[in-house]
Image (cartoon, rainbow, N blue to C red):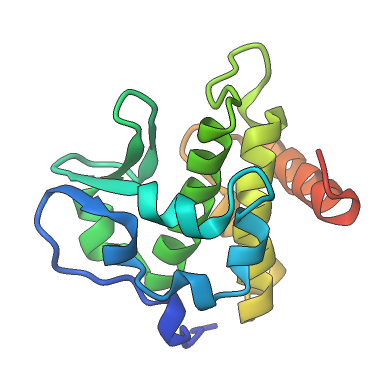
Length: 171
């Protein structure tokens, strides 16, 4: 199903590689219902958006939080050619990770499997809740959760963890 994205969910494309304010890519994110899931009392959305940066890089892949900068690393091929919906959801997911990082959480906890990390579960919960709200089917949600480094069983476990988070408010 093709989902028509609201204006606040449309990523500005055509920026050159390099470091950009997050709000340059998603200037109306604060209007989105997803914003309520990202901002917290400790890190409100306004200051988070003012501080957040996106580093568009000439590499292949998707996106992640580079904790050295700190910024969202967004690979140019995905930025230019990825679906608008996936890009919007991934940028929301990664903004949640930036907030977690600023709050002192370990984004790369190697003691837990990727699909069991509380930070990943929350990041995917942000994306899944918003995707479903916009009209994604369960099949589309599962496709969005799928990654080259995850088996189908791991994707199913991630989906269950996300559902538990959304039902209980925590992993």
